[in-house]
Length: 335
Image (cartoon, rainbow, N blue to C red; front, side, top):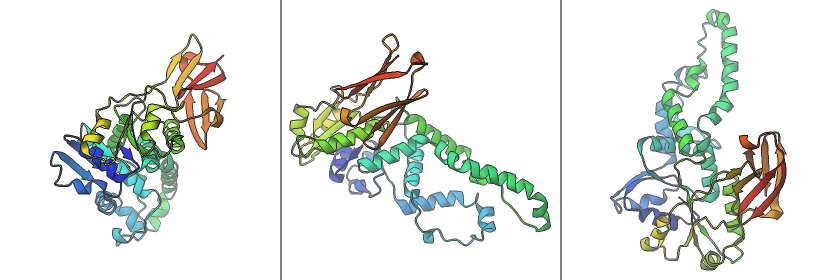
């Protein structure tokens, strides 16, 4: 669940009858519900306590490295914040929560930040290992070549094993990535403002989500033009994507309508006989779309965003010869 208004996000979550809820907003949006909704099992991400808890798990494994770098007396509370660490911490908290709860409602931050968080969570352990593995392999080779020098100088060069993911965290991250994979058992509800009848900001937001691989399954609109846009949907809105109006004030009875809408997953379809691949692209318009093919990958470029689409096996060896965008769906033709 991601909303552009904290009050709306909280109202939607509070409308649930029961269940486990994780607040990943980073601003403790749901703290107001503590003690008010006893049926909700509430867990709130809090940057410093969660970082300290993670440090307590890591410190024993990093003891040799800390000694080598003369950082044994480092005080975690005095470590300056590093770019990207907060987002990684949220992913780790999400992975842990998904391991414990069979069904989990996750309150994400506002749309742009939520999308970045989902993308990072979907990579699982691969992102960390892609960045670290070359460095760790180099260290293993260097450490081996310095083995004789290590004895002479009485050095204690730690192994790279302590810097690699242990099996418990690897399993958690792989489990999270599998749950968030395309076609996985996830649902994404968005509650967004619709300020004007042209709904340009709404279109741009939908375009970002569809291009970056997280297709909304429910959409709630609020704002002065919400009713008008829902009644006369723009051309870029697929008719299969459900939408409801979230009228202000956001009372539980009103926002519960969003949760009651049956989630619909928009999925692509291949017609090998006709040589076509059909993909949902809500929010994308023809003027912004550029389609290119590189080998077995079709690259969709829209407004600074990119989506990579693998050519299906049934169309292998064929080249994309044309594209048609209609009613929020892109049809690619192959010859």
